[in-house]
Length: 287
Image 1 (cartoon, rainbow, N blue to C red):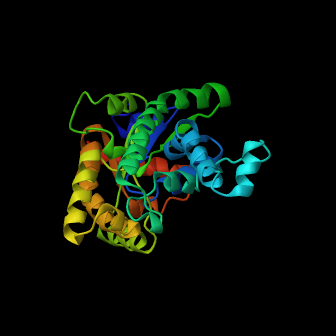
Image 2: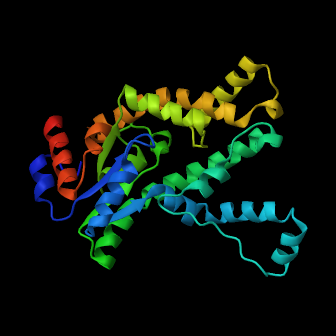
């Protein structure tokens, strides 16, 4: 780790961290708070994925749908309209919409092979965006003069690394550039995440083998063909399994590559000083 002790962290002229964990536990909240202070640069992995690495895929998908409408087709073919994604740090809907969900096309579902193709695109993009972290940390200081840097990682970071492998190329690169900080939830947080997913299921990235096994199990349980599956129903069904699948991966990332804080403590942060104190206590607890 780039900071081994609380004293090293507190004394660092330039603090660099990456926060990880399930979506909805405070990563973007604390990143926005630090950015608003004016001395922290906020690098969003999902934003980088949706702009630099998958922006063209997303825009082409919008255009593909627009081409089905005669009026829009004519305007597109004559360069009379411009269609692009308006993705922001706090609105990543274009990226999740492109990822999509498998199942009944009448309900907005994708063929499973196409769904897996987009999942693979996301994996490639996420690894690239994570490996860009050190560059953006240096760039934030040298170009813009920011002393401090926070990387807001996607919830699927644990799906593209092997935290048990001391030679993992992504985690090795990250740990040389930033302090890895896991925001861990409790049972109440887990229950709330499940409730939200049941109300509004959102597409997400999964490890390929885990996803294929889940898809096969779901088809077997429901007795449905691929084109009969309710896409939202599958996402709800997969989400709880994903929580159980990701928890030990996050724990291993924190144990082997960083520190952990609780979502409860993150929710109490009101200033950069609060965040710095929280990380210092996590380093002290690690020993």
